[in-house]
Image (tube, rainbow, N blue to C red):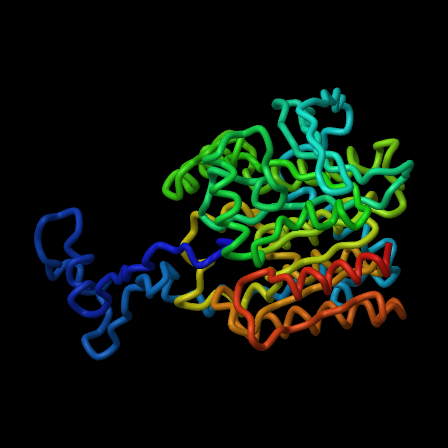
Length: 407
């Protein structure tokens, strides 16, 4: 699901279904209409079965039957496992199984630091490290002035169908040229009230780490049209694009928590849009994350799989697609693995990427889990009635105050 309203036209793909299509299908392979010899195999004229086709949004016509089959049997409260810690272990193991990317705990980060610059009360620093055995990535690391150790935030960038920048969507770039700075500032103006969220956090006393996901910034840029081919090539290689991103985010959290300048008990994940998905997913899969703030990405799966919704386009959805996981867990079920740690979810009521029903279903599931742990005060869900798919200055200030309180 894309971070912003940069969306390509859905189009309409409809296949003819009915008696005409049935006649064509009956004659397939022979070049002629069905002969009397086939009459016994044909449906009676008054009992024609229509061929299943494709409806608007690239859904199979029988998609309601597929959705009816999704019962999420491993969800807390539905699962036969009644001990919450045992359930968390089982649910996390099930998610990790569907990542299709193995854990990579033995690869050394081997960080290399450089490209320092001074900000307003903090130092900007680039860091290059190995998040997996597949290669090294470049990140932006911001450190407040002072002795430390400091609380820290892993910042996870959005999708937005904009690939020339990744970490720079959240951290003001330095030493990269005017073109990248201009692109980053335009993105900040569009979605973040002109602010760079990472720099705001560093000024408030947080160490901040932001790293590009594969395909963005220093690890790209790809194009919108390349996403589906990239994802399918991962699958053909027995791996997963979404799984790699999940594993890298967990490794990034561990790296951040392990820095001498960081108080490892006070590390949060924060993201907007796809970054919000990454934030709650990282909290679910990592014990190094003490809290997560998630802006504009939470929904029930069945409620969002409706004609017209952005997720049906494919493309951007592949970054958040773990094949087969929906047979076991819904999105809020995965996020609930992080319970009872502090979690914040913000949503704009005018956000066209998610249905109101989907958001409310997800919030209800989340509240039920936290309440079951007698930790309802640790979960905060809020809908901003006047906002769409954005992370504005007032929302940011809300998150900053919340982080100060929970870390």
